Length: 329
Image (cartoon, rainbow, N blue to C red; front, side):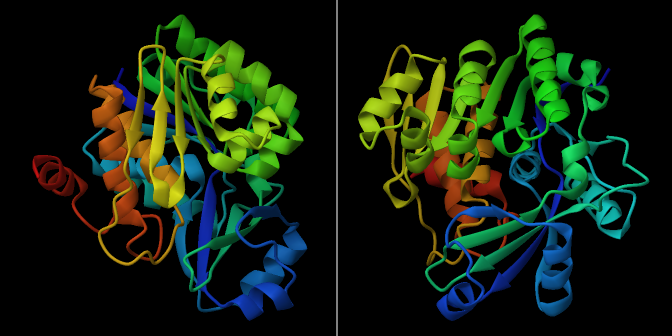
């Protein structure tokens, strides 16, 4: 059986990116800077009206696996698509990037998921997401052998929606731990945390070794506006907490130490789509190589810094060369 450094389990989404302005956000009554779920009717409306978008396979953890592959890691991905045009495009994109993806697509039912990402001049992204086929992820899609042969299984908070998907997440975490492998989770969005706060806390305490959260998500999880208080509370739930703070970098906690990571910017900040996803890719890559949390965090800052310097969540620079150069300076 092939060995993997990282297995991602998440929503299989086609990202459709648009450069837009504040007027568009206001006129369409969009909630700026966060993710909002939409139905298939609205998804089809956006898709037909907005022809100039850039289409690329996406989804938070899927982006992480692609970033991980670009670092020469060996990733796999589990997620649900439909056997339609967009589903085929998603599958081919991951395979081309070097990510193993063999989850059986659905034939009937909702279409492949789409995330309409509206990027304003301040580089903020506003997401409207149609979950579609993603909602049909079930325990039978969880490949025991791939999980047993993956150093780290990375779970996506966005998936925590349908009961079968929740069962899938727990099943995957249990298999990973029985094989003495690590489990990581990204909280994904404040919307998810607010909706499933108590369930997320239970999931983290029972099944998660490495947690990724941004400032808003951490505060929402702990129901406080005090970031340090939130971080300390979360650090008592799991082994490693990675708290990302946008342009202020990140703070990483474990039982032995707390380290500060400075943000890296290689150009003007053009688009923050995928910044957290690629930060996770860099950090998990470091851990898979048994690097310290400090070195892993610095690698993560470099991979995230590259992504925000251009449009879209796919690296445009050789990340290994960039890391070698930056860490040598």
